[in-house]
Image 1: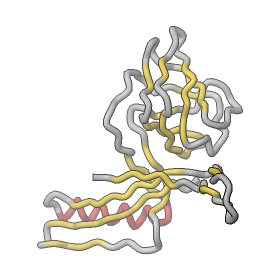
Image 2: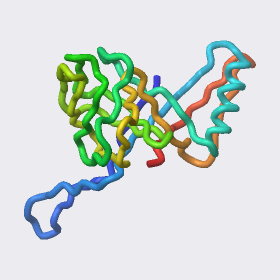
Image 3: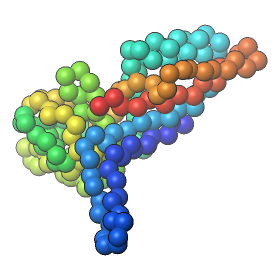
Image 4: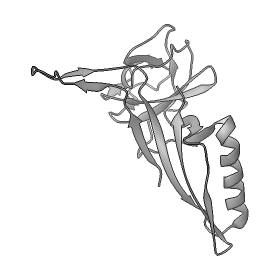
Length: 185
């Protein structure tokens, strides 16, 4: 089962001579996902997985981001207006009264690259299909008007962490491999 995690680049600053601790938020927080994969019983499936991961070391990896719910909308909404930044994303293209639930993940597709975010407070689309969604982490890019937000099947895009890939052949029928995909931006 994939294990997603947040990479937070902020810090708690504690004064050396006393006083209140303060949270210093820094831009750039992003996600990583740890995967422990074992092929069912196909040597061919294991060989293909390892080949794709080796290729992914230099070309990047695209992987489904796990979550336990599906939104009540189809197709995926898009960014409503250029020049947005921060932790609120205006969207359009929702069905009227569709919702985005707190803790729901989505990927924002900008200039051909995906960025994973999640909803921090439930939002409901108006009759016109627009919604102002509170998100985290803050936007790492300035999305263009019409950029797609993949709520139905969010994807993480990034690189394999580390500079090596290891796998284990078991009984000539199973291949066990573990890897981590980390968003590049």
